[in-house]
Length: 121
Image 1 (cartoon, one colour):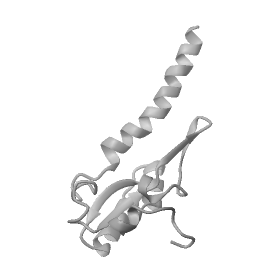
Image 2 (cartoon, helix red, strand yellow):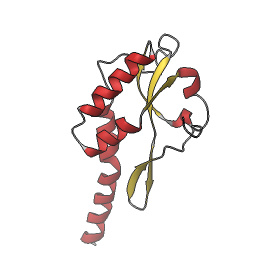
Image 3 (cartoon, rainbow, N blue to C red):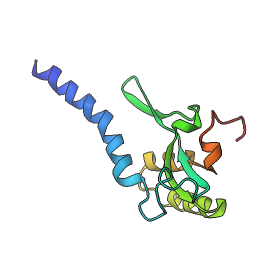
Image 4 (cartoon, rainbow, N blue to C red):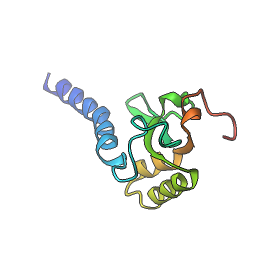
C-alpha cells in the first residue's frame, strides 16, 4: 500500500512542479504588465504553447489554438518583443525554459485570440 501511495505522490509532483515553475519563474515580472490586463495598451504579445500532459510526461502543444497559448508578456512594438524573447533564450538556465522561450512567438493581441498557427507562421 505504501508503494502505491508513493507512486501517486510522485505522479502529482511531476504534474504540479512544471506548473509552479511556470507561475513563479517563467512569467517576466519586469518586462511589462501581463497581457491579459493591458491588451489594448500593448498591441504585441509574447505567447508560448500550452503544455500537453500525456503518458506521464509533458510536451508543448504548438498545434493548440492561439487563444489557449500562455501570455508571457505584453509590449508596445514587435522589436521590443523579439529583443526580450531573444534575451530570454540566451539566458535560459534549463532545457525546459530554453524550449519554452524558443517556441514562444511575438504576435498581435488580435491574432493571439485566433485559431491555430498557419504553416510557416
